[in-house]
Length: 117
Picture 1: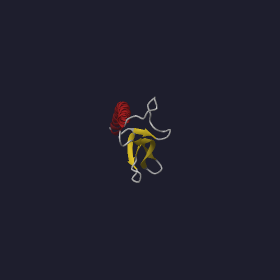
Picture 2 (picture 1 turned 90 degrees about the vertical axis):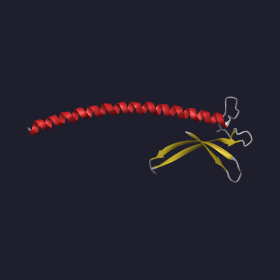
Picture 3 (picture 1 turned 30 degrees about the horizontal axis):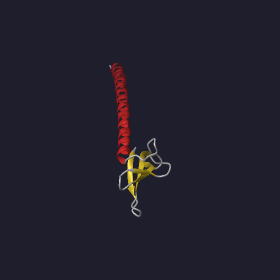
Picture 4 (picture 1 turned 45 degrees about the vertical axis):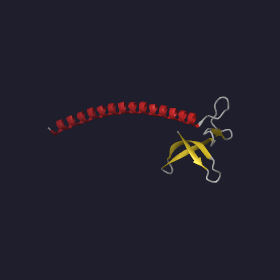
């Protein structure tokens, strides 16, 4: 998940989107889902929610762009941590499978050597 800014050249308004990447199996290409958060106030730099879909704090006030970015960075850090844990689990599983395969291969070689003798 990331924050994407897009400036409308005709109106000069900068819109802010929450973007999530995914793999499109049919087209074999990466794609992105974007959800409109709001537009940036040029004077304050705050995000002004547009319609019902904007990010707001519990009081209904628009969050400053720094807060939105901090929240996004925290979310990304959590995702990275979860991925590291998953990688460690898969690595341990991979090592166990390698040891098992080595034992099977050794037994097969021993049987083959007995057969050849």
